[in-house]
Image (cartoon, rainbow, N blue to C red):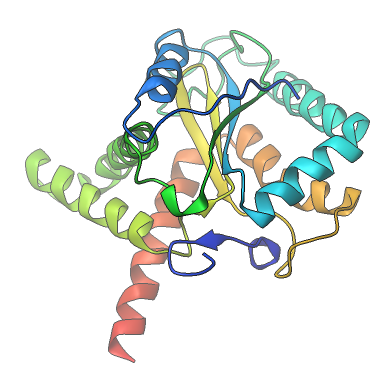
Length: 242
């Protein structure tokens, strides 16, 4: 499924959302994002660019199949609420807030830049990416400390592996989607549609939505994030050796 998602990467061509254009030096978007995090809100953040073909595909699909899209977002909330209905005491140590009742219904929020060449080079987007890296680092660190006695060393190892993951152009591009639950990172997805931009169907929405819904309902999502980073690290090592 992940191969079906197309990414405008750093080395190639290159619902309820509020959009505005900010300058490269502005940190307005990040300040807004951080406010949501501090308020422990739940949302799906779409990050894109005005001239990104696959971003346009996503927006056109969302617009042309609005009823379908709105239904998927509702399902995201309902399916999670059903999954955790029997949980009386959520794990206070969960890094993804799994088991907690949602402080608000998940909705789609949008941050866009004008040019895809600006992706993750502007102040606001770099800060959002650094926030994501910090969240993943903390999750991975807990796993590494099972075999590494020093927290300092485990933290450095976790951050290095996480940075290496996002330095890979296949893992970072536009469009990008961040799933946040009660102020904590749940998952992220990159890309939308097929290899060739243009054309949008309800099927594309289903393909895009499935991993997002799976992550939302996954009671071992932290393990899924760890596997995602570690598998990428193994692939890079194998590639270097080849």
